[in-house]
Length: 344
Image 1 (cartoon, rainbow, N blue to C red):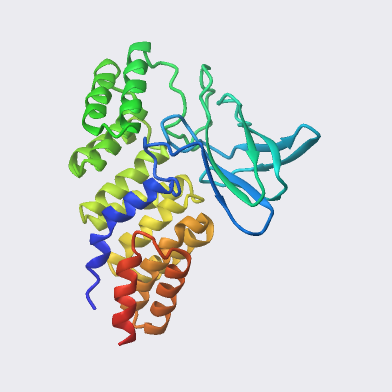
Image 2 (cartoon, rainbow, N blue to C red; image 1 turned 90 degrees about the vertical axis):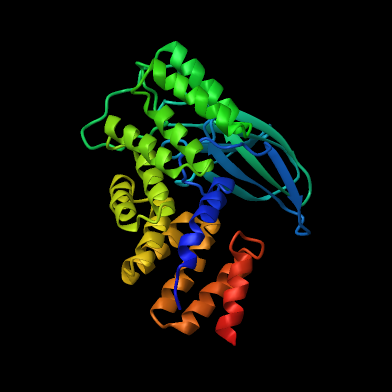
């Protein structure tokens, strides 16, 4: 069966990652709209949970893991670290008032805290914004991973002002206006790496993949070790169906940060399109195992890989697993259709 459907899903998948980042997933590196700070749901278990994700004000992922401390007035609480996507979760909590403090051991970000009231059976989801400190970034040894989220001490205040305005516009869904503001920031400071990256993201959202690729390429020229633009360039090339070029960029993204499930996911998709099925299966499996529940989308693509390999039973198993974990997911309707055909 021809697998052109994989290509057609790339745009939908990118949208899915943005939402999860997102979320969710999100290891997509870009400005995005931030969801409400408190999103409660309830279950009948009686105990509650507090979880969420730590991001920058722009919605970009924070560089490195973040320490999260959960406490009450009478209990110093417990500490854990976010995963590579900035996610955290505390379970089996009694009703009461809780304090959540997020801090970065890199000393790059200002610590922040939240106070929440947890009711019986509540599952509370938070988005915590961690702001950068106004400090000169420390030097890094050669070959170190550098995130686009890091401070550039040479950015003029006028360029930073335009960048912040652009980010606000992007978070409000005003993509075209955000593009112009990012351009203005770059006219003031042409080597503004994060502005090139985020401008590229806005172009991606506007389906201008060629322009997006140019901006990500400009960011990479400024710093070849910056992970986010390298990943985003790979995504842009997948959307352009330039799969071999995408694989080259995504392999480099993996070499910069091998723990990033988003790079593994897109490398798996591009490899499936070029019939590198063993590579595709490996990378999609790694995205699934290292990325958490939001990467269940990888099972949909693993099903296509198994179909190409003639493993009908495994394809059916992957589709069922995907639908079980994500019955309303972005690929759910297509997964059901494909499952029906395989079961005929």
